[in-house]
Length: 124
Image 1 (cartoon, rainbow, N blue to C red):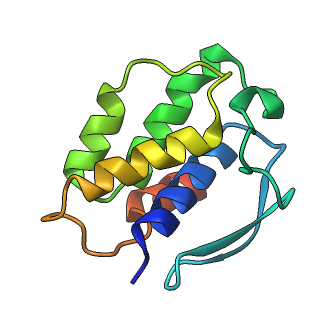
Image 2: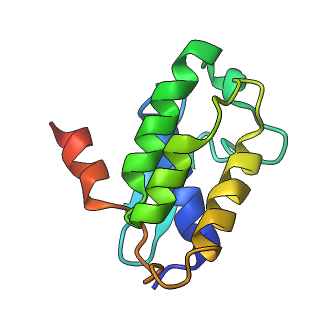
Image 3: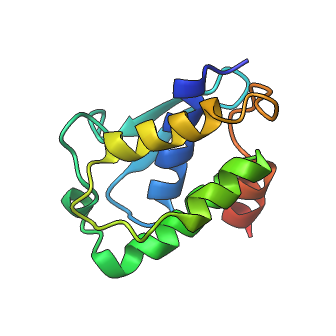
């Protein structure tokens, strides 16, 4: 079972990779909810979306992808209702925001790392 922080991190990274080619997933273990990316410090403190050539216009797509990565309906819905983020937003802040949403829905949190829908969309 994933920790809430692990799940939030994986979901944000997965959505981020759908928006930019400057971050690549090297290894992903869905059962353990672990992920390794290149560059290794891709979501380190202080990193912003704009550091990966993501502009404000792409942030809505990122948000939609992030919502698809959340298997909890309430969390997915809440992500879709966020006001539009700016590309100058720190990635760690978004991870913390997702973590807070998951923790706020204890009845729907069952330790799932990422939604199946995220994989169907990526593979199509």
